[in-house]
Image (cartoon, rainbow, N blue to C red; front, side, top):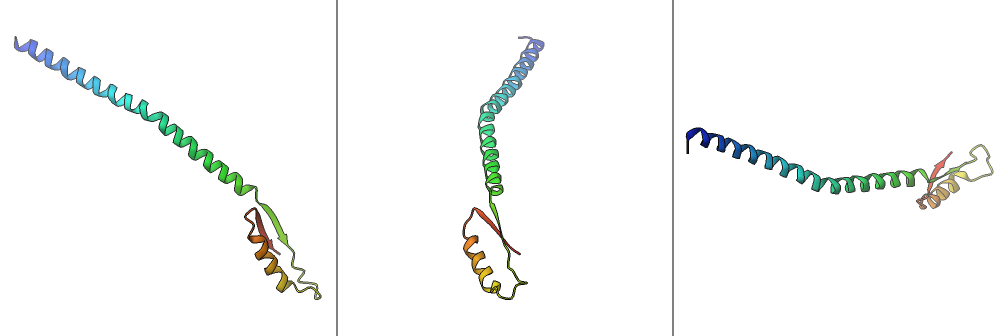
Length: 95
């Protein structure tokens, strides 16, 4: 075998090896892409549902009546706040 023919064949073999490794890399990306997209979709929906759940909390405003002396607001407002704060669907504010 001549020296030039051997160099030519070696170069062709090297090029085909590089091409096959590139194709292998692309096929691995194609194999992993659906899994990645599925996980990304799952986390986006989970985040969206959590944000919607947080936004759906009902707001409760407890008016203390501190300007009316006949009302014992210092005792009733904290007690009412504690009772209502136990419900996770409510967001309680005391005025």
